[in-house]
Length: 280
Image (cartoon, rainbow, N blue to C red; front, side, top):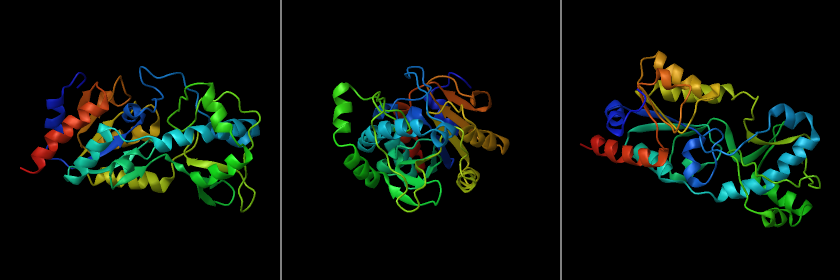
């Protein structure tokens, strides 16, 4: 139902235990641009093939990420994230499956969060599996590239993509490091374009949908299959599906309710309405 309103959304979800799938559109009000929203800047995220096959791409990525991850780390949750945490405490939301890597659901207080595409805060070795925090790596990169962040920020405002990739143009001199354990290739623990979400993570997310009565999508265009599969799964099992997103999504045709709206205000309204119903 395109053009649906908040009352129709409330009516669909009232009395249900709701699993939630979120995308980059939920974090725009926190200052992180969306990849595909109507007002999004042009974006060309790096693919896993580029990252693993070309040291120049890796150098560019780590230089930009060295700046971008700090901005993402300092980003705060918005009213939409807080609303979902409120609904979880009220027993309405069973958990959140997020395509975002920004940790804003966890910062907002949500307890059951499946980070479908990983998070920006961890780094993994592709050879031996060794992990370290992004903050630890940042100390090493700063020692190798003193003053790089300050020079990049002097050039102008820093635009940071949803994967913590900052728009930094001068990267040719940046030095990066390999795994301290085996010398293998380090990579942010994020699912890149062209990679598959780990099977056990998908299974955990499917179980969350199966154990819920309905599915709510917030801020995702469902362009990539990693998110669309949950909508199709819920619909195939007769569970109501609601979508809040600014602009069309690939799930509109099978959703029971589609609200074309920003997420923050609509989720805040939904939290007020459904929390009140749940305690009656």
